[in-house]
Image (cartoon, rainbow, N blue to C red; front, side, top):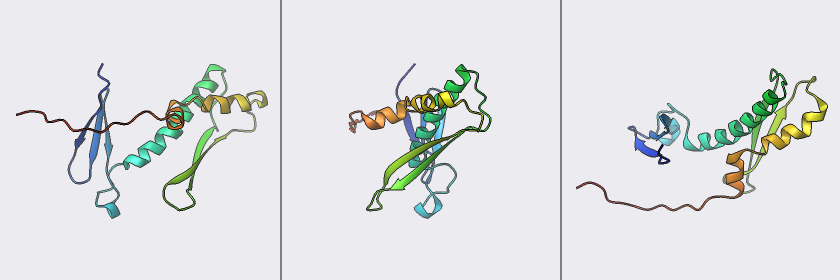
Length: 135
Protein backbone atom coordinates (compact mmCIF):
# COMPACT_ATOMS: atom_id res chain seq x y z
CA UNK A 1 0.00 0.00 0.00
CA UNK A 2 1.40 3.36 -1.01
CA UNK A 3 2.05 5.94 1.67
CA UNK A 4 1.90 8.75 -0.89
CA UNK A 5 -1.00 11.17 -0.69
CA UNK A 6 -1.86 12.60 -4.09
CA UNK A 7 -3.24 16.15 -4.04
CA UNK A 8 -5.21 17.32 -7.07
CA UNK A 9 -7.17 20.42 -8.02
CA UNK A 10 -10.92 20.09 -8.48
CA UNK A 11 -11.78 23.45 -10.05
CA UNK A 12 -12.23 26.82 -8.43
CA UNK A 13 -10.60 26.72 -5.00
CA UNK A 14 -11.18 22.98 -4.49
CA UNK A 15 -8.14 20.93 -3.53
CA UNK A 16 -8.55 17.21 -2.94
CA UNK A 17 -6.32 14.58 -1.38
CA UNK A 18 -6.42 10.94 -2.43
CA UNK A 19 -5.10 8.55 0.18
CA UNK A 20 -5.65 4.85 0.86
CA UNK A 21 -8.71 4.67 -1.38
CA UNK A 22 -10.39 7.78 0.02
CA UNK A 23 -10.81 11.19 -1.55
CA UNK A 24 -10.75 13.97 1.03
CA UNK A 25 -12.34 17.06 -0.48
CA UNK A 26 -11.59 20.62 0.58
CA UNK A 27 -12.80 24.00 -0.61
CA UNK A 28 -12.49 27.57 0.54
CA UNK A 29 -15.26 29.66 2.06
CA UNK A 30 -17.23 31.90 -0.27
CA UNK A 31 -15.57 35.01 1.20
CA UNK A 32 -12.19 33.50 0.24
CA UNK A 33 -13.20 32.84 -3.37
CA UNK A 34 -14.44 29.27 -2.96
CA UNK A 35 -17.88 27.75 -3.08
CA UNK A 36 -17.94 26.58 0.56
CA UNK A 37 -18.77 23.08 -0.74
CA UNK A 38 -16.37 21.25 1.59
CA UNK A 39 -14.37 22.01 4.74
CA UNK A 40 -11.30 24.19 4.43
CA UNK A 41 -7.97 22.38 4.98
CA UNK A 42 -7.45 24.07 8.35
CA UNK A 43 -10.88 22.86 9.48
CA UNK A 44 -9.83 19.30 8.62
CA UNK A 45 -6.65 19.80 10.62
CA UNK A 46 -8.66 20.89 13.67
CA UNK A 47 -11.15 18.05 13.17
CA UNK A 48 -8.28 15.55 13.06
CA UNK A 49 -7.31 16.57 16.59
CA UNK A 50 -10.80 16.17 18.06
CA UNK A 51 -11.66 12.97 16.20
CA UNK A 52 -8.31 11.44 17.13
CA UNK A 53 -8.94 12.16 20.81
CA UNK A 54 -12.47 10.88 20.29
CA UNK A 55 -11.40 7.49 18.94
CA UNK A 56 -9.18 6.95 21.96
CA UNK A 57 -12.03 7.90 24.32
CA UNK A 58 -14.40 5.59 22.41
CA UNK A 59 -11.95 2.68 22.44
CA UNK A 60 -11.26 3.19 26.15
CA UNK A 61 -14.97 3.00 26.96
CA UNK A 62 -15.65 0.09 24.62
CA UNK A 63 -12.81 -1.98 26.07
CA UNK A 64 -14.30 -1.56 29.56
CA UNK A 65 -17.95 -1.99 28.60
CA UNK A 66 -18.73 1.62 29.53
CA UNK A 67 -21.73 2.96 27.58
CA UNK A 68 -20.84 5.93 25.39
CA UNK A 69 -24.33 7.45 25.34
CA UNK A 70 -24.03 10.98 26.68
CA UNK A 71 -20.27 11.22 26.17
CA UNK A 72 -19.08 14.05 23.96
CA UNK A 73 -15.67 15.43 23.13
CA UNK A 74 -15.78 19.22 22.83
CA UNK A 75 -12.79 20.99 21.31
CA UNK A 76 -12.42 24.73 21.98
CA UNK A 77 -9.98 27.12 20.34
CA UNK A 78 -8.53 30.29 21.82
CA UNK A 79 -6.68 32.76 19.59
CA UNK A 80 -3.11 33.81 20.14
CA UNK A 81 -2.78 37.17 21.91
CA UNK A 82 -2.09 38.88 18.57
CA UNK A 83 -5.19 37.26 17.06
CA UNK A 84 -3.21 35.45 14.38
CA UNK A 85 -3.90 31.75 14.63
CA UNK A 86 -4.76 29.49 17.53
CA UNK A 87 -2.91 29.85 20.81
CA UNK A 88 -4.66 27.16 22.83
CA UNK A 89 -6.77 24.10 22.11
CA UNK A 90 -8.82 22.67 24.97
CA UNK A 91 -10.39 19.22 24.69
CA UNK A 92 -13.19 18.66 27.19
CA UNK A 93 -14.59 15.16 27.59
CA UNK A 94 -18.18 15.62 28.71
CA UNK A 95 -19.26 12.64 30.80
CA UNK A 96 -22.71 11.60 32.00
CA UNK A 97 -23.38 11.49 35.77
CA UNK A 98 -23.14 7.69 35.86
CA UNK A 99 -19.63 7.58 34.34
CA UNK A 100 -17.41 5.60 36.76
CA UNK A 101 -15.45 8.02 38.94
CA UNK A 102 -12.42 5.70 38.99
CA UNK A 103 -12.00 6.11 35.19
CA UNK A 104 -12.16 9.91 34.92
CA UNK A 105 -8.38 10.44 34.96
CA UNK A 106 -7.80 7.36 32.82
CA UNK A 107 -10.11 8.58 30.06
CA UNK A 108 -8.08 11.82 29.93
CA UNK A 109 -4.91 9.75 29.64
CA UNK A 110 -6.53 7.79 26.81
CA UNK A 111 -7.41 10.99 24.91
CA UNK A 112 -3.82 12.17 25.34
CA UNK A 113 -2.61 9.14 23.37
CA UNK A 114 -3.86 10.79 20.17
CA UNK A 115 -1.26 10.45 17.42
CA UNK A 116 -2.26 13.77 15.86
CA UNK A 117 -1.57 15.61 19.13
CA UNK A 118 1.75 13.77 19.50
CA UNK A 119 2.79 14.88 16.01
CA UNK A 120 1.94 18.48 16.83
CA UNK A 121 3.93 18.30 20.06
CA UNK A 122 6.89 16.66 18.26
CA UNK A 123 6.48 17.78 14.66
CA UNK A 124 8.00 15.95 11.70
CA UNK A 125 10.52 17.60 9.41
CA UNK A 126 8.83 19.23 6.42
CA UNK A 127 10.43 19.39 3.00
CA UNK A 128 8.75 21.05 0.01
CA UNK A 129 10.36 20.52 -3.38
CA UNK A 130 9.59 20.54 -7.10
CA UNK A 131 10.04 17.76 -9.59
CA UNK A 132 9.54 17.93 -13.34
CA UNK A 133 7.62 14.92 -14.65
CA UNK A 134 6.52 13.82 -18.09
CA UNK A 135 7.82 15.03 -21.41
